[in-house]
Image 1 (cartoon, chains in turn blue, red):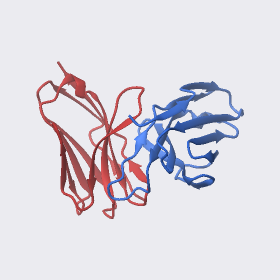
Image 2 (spheres, helix red, strand yellow):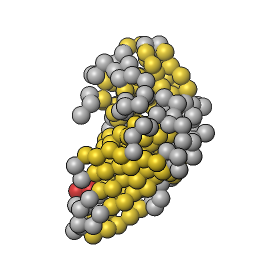
Image 3 (tube, chains in turn yellow, orange):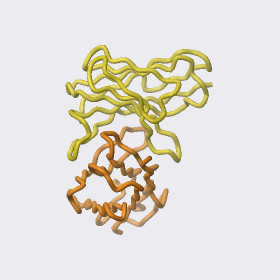
Image 4 (cartoon, one colour):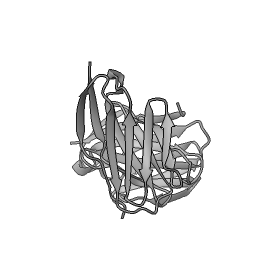
Length: 115
Length: 110
């Protein structure tokens, strides 16, 4: 299994509070991604990173920010959590851009509940 | 915007039966298509990746086909076992990012 650790695994927080989720990899892969998974929606891309300090938005980036100060760490921050951000968050990594034969490897996920 | 659909959302079969899982997508200009397995409370594990130039890919009891022109992929699992019970998701790569279907949850009854 790819060396991807997400923390925390579970988090319960209140509306309006800031929340930071961490993804740590030991594979030295250049690309890192944050997805959210909701019933009936599959996985949707929030943000991704293509190198240290290089990030870009995905399809559902509103209300989220990210940072990558080191190759191995990719942080997802909810500045002011809302109930609509209750979801399971997955981190993924890939060695290079998603070209013809590049696979994506996933962490175990963080279950976030915003009350 | 790429739309990926998986029908049915859930499937229950007796042990030993062959499984057929369907995935359709709206934009045929893709780099590849991947099939993933997800167990409850766990992350996704890549099962098969089919490049856009390929028609099928096989791994053990799993075989995935790709018909780009019609926007379809099918995952076949031969001689299903209770351990195959999981949610199976397909994802297409069309712009260096993956678009996922919502998945098909499979239950194999012993």
